[in-house]
View (cartoon, rainbow, N blue to C red):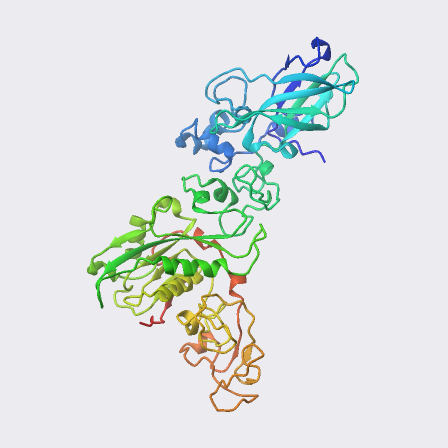
Length: 554
C-alpha cells in the first residue's frame, strides 16, 4: 500500500537519461529538488504547525543551530525553525536540510544524488544513491522511488534497498543509501527517477517521535526503531510520553539512561531525607539499599503485561547514589529541622521540594520526603496525595527495612489512586490483601488464605471472596478454603453476623455502616500513572491528601 503524501512533503528528485551514460556503471549527476506533489499542492500551502516543544529527533537537530529563545518563539516558525522555513536562503527547507544532513543556517548547494546503471543477466537496472539520515532510515516507511519517461508523470516503482555507507559522524548520522529499481529499463532513450520522502516528520500522537519510526512492533531496538505505536502518545500507559522515554526530555532529563523504556511501564521516585537523633540514637532516614530493592521487587513481580510482552513495572529510584542519579540528597542533619511543620503541600514541604527537587523532574518523578515526623508531632507513618506526585514517609525511630519499603509502597499507592480499602476508604478488611490495608501495611499480605500477614509486600490482586458481615460463611473463609473462625467462637459456623473490621473507627462513612458487604480490590489493575502531572501549589488547592494514622511497629 502506498504511503500517504503529507502536506509538508519534501522530495529528492533524481533524473537522468540513459543516453547520458556512455557505459553501464558510470555515475550520472542528478538534479536536487524539493516540493509538494501536485496532487497535494493545496494542502502544501498551509503546512501544519510544528510545536517547538516536540521532542522528535528533528527538534534535537534544531537545538544545534537555534537558541532556546528562538525555538520557543512561535512567531519565528515561518522564518527560522519551522519545517518549511529556509533561514539561510539557500533554497533548501529545514526538513530537507535535516534529512540530508546540511546546515539550516549556512547557505550551501544541496548534495547531488547519483544515478548509475548495472547489468544483470542482459538487463539494465537503475541504481539510485542519495544521502539520508540514518536515524530515520526505515525504507518501508520513509522512502518511495518514483520513475518517469517524460518528467511529467511519475509512478511509484518497486525498489529494493541495496546498501548504505557507515556514517562518518555519529552526532550527524548521514549515510549514502542505494536502491535498485526492481523492473529493468525497457526504453533506454529516457529514464527519470526521484526519491520521495513520505512520512519524515509527521507525529500523529504528539509523543515526540515521528510516525515514520513508530512501527508498532513492540520490540525496542533503540531510538531509531523504538517499536512504539504511532497513534498512542504513551504506548505503555505509564504516564510518560514515548518520546521522553526514548530520547529524554527537552529539559535534558535523560530518562533512557535512567532505565526508562517506552514499551514497559516505569515509575520514578526521588528520595530526600533528614538525619537526626530525636527520640532515639542518631539515625538517618535515607532509604537503605535493602528497602529500595524490596520495594522495587514488588513492582517487578506485579501482574499486568507490558506492550513488549514482559510482566511487571520497573521502579527507578534516586537517592543520590551518583552517576545519572544525583537528585536524592540529605535535606538537613539538624534535630530542629527533622520534625517538619505541616505535611504534603504545606509551605515547609514545598520549600524543601523547591530547594532539592530539580525542576526538570516535574511531570516525571514522584517526590518522597523522609523526615522524622511531619505535622511536628504526628505519630503517622506517612502522608500522600491521591492521584498526585508527592508523599511523606515518617517512621521516627522505626526505620527497619520492611517498615521503610512497606510504607513507601503504601504512600506511593495513594499517588497511584489507591485508598485504604482499594477503591474506597473502608479499612482493615480481612479479605483486602494489600499493603494499602492497615491490617497488612507492616506485617505484609497473607499468602495462605488465612488472615494474619505473611510478610509479602504486594498490592491486592482482587482474588479473595466478598464477605457479607450479616451472613458470613466461616466454612468459606476468605478464599473458599480453609475455613476461618471469624468470631472466635471455637466452632466453624455459617450465617454468622460479625463486624470483621471493627478496628476501622470510621466505618459509618468509609464502609457504609458497621455490618456491611466487604469486597477485595484488584489494586494492580486500578493503578493510575497520571499523578506525576500534578503541579505543586499551596495546600488550598483541590487535591485530596491522605494521612496514614497507622503507627509503625518498633
